[in-house]
Image (cartoon, rainbow, N blue to C red; front, side, top):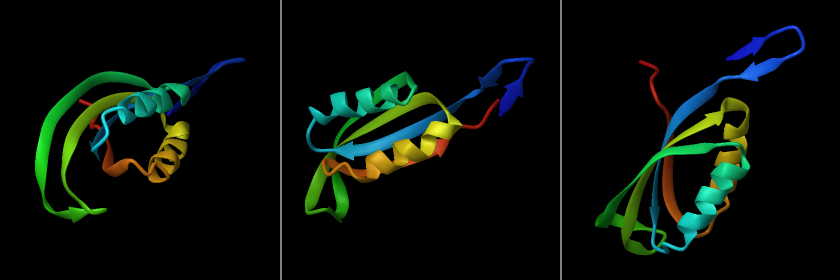
Length: 101
């Protein structure tokens, strides 16, 4: 949502839930810096631990599960998705918009 004043445009930050699977914990720094470089802010982060996958994904049978709640302008969301898709070390991710309560 965009609010427009006389000479100012204010973009409302939307909240998103990013859940992803990694094998390499060093890649966490890259994902955090990617979010911050696109003007996002990590509100909360959780590590759900290493879990065995029900079926192989990219030849992996287990992975570390992470969950972030992030705030970001909607206009930067497509760029975030594009960069996450090209990340070879990221096994899988799910990015959802959180409901406003």
